[in-house]
Image (cartoon, rainbow, N blue to C red; front, side, top):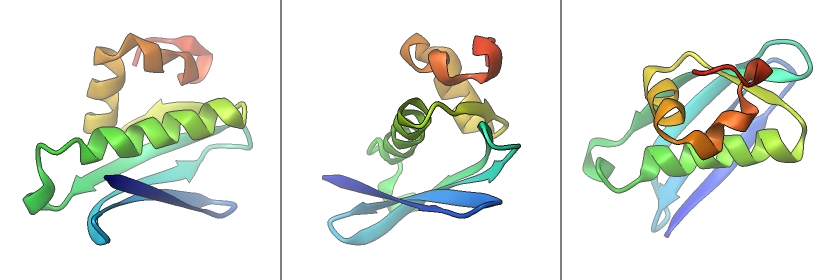
Length: 99
């Protein structure tokens, strides 16, 4: 089971994934004002490629945005492609525009 932990401060934050207690991936973001954040980087440890680690971190980011009435700007190529592919995630985009 993949566990995702969030770290957040006033300027930036991250979602970090662990699989069986081992570090599996990291997604970083930067705040762009009070109501939106920019996902700027996603990385998955090579040994965990193809196990859904990146998607789990993105889903955690989307859920955080929904619960806190925030919007996401997906500058990271992975996050942008995943949001384009999954229409159910697009409600958190800035102005609900296409990624």
